Length: 163
Image 1 (cartoon, one colour):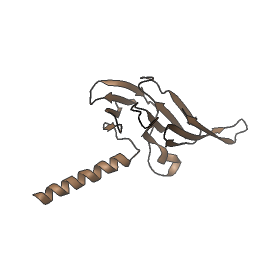
Image 2 (tube, helix red, strand yellow):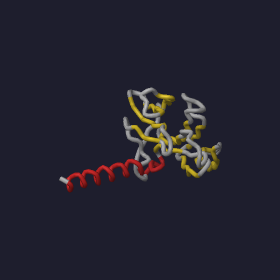
Image 3 (cartoon, rainbow, N blue to C red):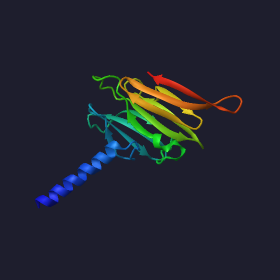
Image 4 (cartoon, helix red, strand yellow):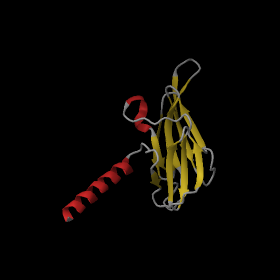
């Protein structure tokens, strides 16, 4: 009996580590913000949406329409950057902030910054890339890079930081 319990516990631990390391969001699963009592959930009832909850409540404090957002996995088409990631604005911050990167349209990518305490319906920052958006989360914010089509048909790289 002890061996069976140990195997089950090990399997649950491995599964939780895999989910925690994954940037690709799982539809319908509640994901917790590290260091706070907030959760977020991605759901699709005809339209893709992301909802934020406080203290295991069933009543959302924010809901975001992500219509047109497609998440993919793998190394092609910059899919490895699609997903949802938490942003910490400081060591003591418990403000729930998410960076959502997804594909939109035929080839473009979009990065949305969602901050429920600042705006509970719309992203507070959005940037599009003609083909890609990449980002690096660091203490205090996020650094991003994207491409934009120039007037002559070539592509230029944009670099920036939020906030």
